[in-house]
Image 1 (cartoon, rainbow, N blue to C red):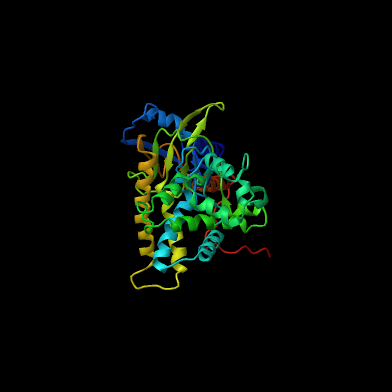
Image 2: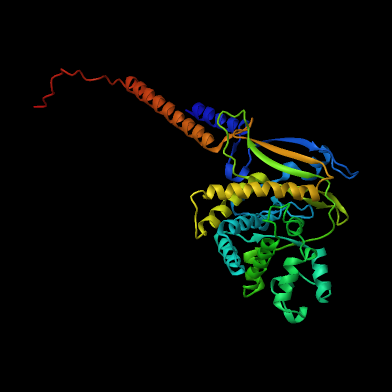
Length: 405
């Protein structure tokens, strides 16, 4: 019996060492094969090579997260936090939907735009992202004669400090390109025809006003930050590459993995506080799709008049079409001189040296049952041998009963 237990324990220890279990929740992804492909050469001396890209991204240390409740940052390479990226961030995607909503509804007032944005943010489990930069803050501060203007001064404005009215402040924030720190939204304001904004910058300005109105309707700075995330990016554009991140299941897996998590990238890394070591534009197309669909579904549900030709699917298709055009325009204006890379992560369901946790538990359970069966058989054999040794013999079925009288 001791030998049986020893064999069972030895088998389990051996399997745990050779095939350690993993959990999808804590150790995702189990195995990744990275493929880096270059689609366009760079035109500057500072352009990153494929080896430089891998060094910058530190692929083995990336944080994988399900993006459902994560905000989407801008592609801007001045961000020093791990993030997902799209042109204009969350707010850029919102403007896409707002523009087509305006087209489908026939008209849109500022009050309606405000209400739509507030209600949409309330459906999210996190703040809506847009960013500014220190150049825009310097311009706004200089315009109103305020030295070292802070972003908090815009979220909860002190009109006396700014020596202005809310109307004038709104006008500067929403119509002056220099007051917009996001390159994508600034370009959409300046080039409405190229960005398919119905030939007018009015919807862009309206959307910007609504963004600030959300903050201004808050009772405190803390409450405003629960509604919108409005960081200030610093420094100049020194991006050295454009990276498009794609995640796919390994095509060689028998049962392809349903991929839900996505890797966050750090666009800019500093070395000991000196000049940025590397800076890249970051774009996550797989993350954008579900968020864009949520915007389309929300805005379509708020339309008061529906035509037979217009469905939520059509609404999404129109957003996707405009989104592709706007992406091309922004990349052309901001990233035309840097190399373009496609970084694809192929995810395997089962790594070469690991097995799923459920399978590992099953093996342990089968081993335990096997040990118990072996013990039961050994016990039965021993009982039988003891009976024979003690001289007990089975009683014949036809034996006469014993009469003591």
